Image (cartoon, rainbow, N blue to C red; front, side, top):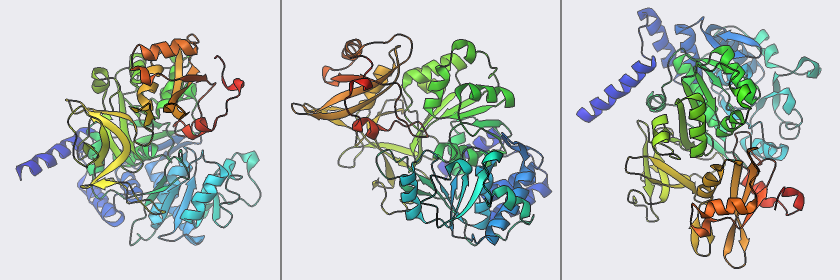
Length: 546
């Protein structure tokens, strides 16, 4: 009993510190409570409540200007009614293929107000991937940016289609836009659906056809408490979301934004200098990125990096792919100790969060489990392994996914779900991720995880990016091949980098080959597409130095 009381009091403290719980007029509080009771805690209820408590506050800042919470509420009412008039009803799926702008946010809220299901389509997918996903998920409508018309030509031909963003000169005669729908729709709340809609996020597709991950709507404020217990975001702040909104990390901050009544600053494309300029322009308190964005910013010339005033930043929140320890240290040395790195997956949401002090004390750590989350390292038999030993990473929380939309799920043991990675815990409860459990390379009977070698090579001053894979070897079964992108701070050759690895790791972890590329193939969220590296042939043009 006392443990439960302490837990609730601790959660209350987190919400008070974040400004979620704050003094509100009784009549306003009553209207909010009624709205949440009718609409739930999802995107519809969250933005309706924000329009009640902060109607004149800025909700969205993008290339078209500013929208307040009251304006977003009104516009999404209109959009929901027009989508309904076009035949979209509760329980239908609606694909959303938009870059970061108001159209993504408004489409999500309008779809939620109808009780329809939002399917987020990755803007970096190729046409065949999109066609396969659309045929499997069967949305009745797709809301998309004009630039993706060609990619959707095959997969979207049987769907109702609405353009969310277009350049005026690109608009085609007969295009139906959400701007038109908003203008034509009724400005009144729709009737609340009997059941709330859900959201489906796609896996990255780095190892095959993207899978649909059905995400439950929060049944409590527990998930928000979990994130806010480790990342000091505050109500009313300005958050520049550079990470794609269709990705679970960008979407998490969109969702947190409605709880905190945050201003979301959005830009359709990421440009490293443009990102710094936007932080300065809107005086952003928080910046949401994937690690490759941090890398690109740090690659800017020093005079460019120092040419923008980003002193307003209190939080830089990173996730989406592995964050090498040296990248975290270089970022904090440059911009300050306000970096927070979240480790998780599309299926489990989050597992651990590393605060600045974690990354300073233990470079390379993925951090500790936040409130309400359990992380365990399990061995082959399903039992917990001793501290310091490597095993499979399993996670338990309220936000575990419900299963793939095409069938199947992840391994679950005693209510905990695997992330698909292996790792270890140190004595302070900090997690270290060692790699994907399906990427382990067996070379001469020795087990090697590529990430350890990647992290070491990435710490060399002459290396900007690196990826390591296993390739067949007649003698050893597999051998390591590294793909390196030079940093511009010297151009170390193959033998120099091999010596660097040998001086720091066991001899069997030294790559037998190092190939030099102009850039690593990545998807829209910055993950390296290792299948493309595996498919690379051996022409000498691929290697800038042997």
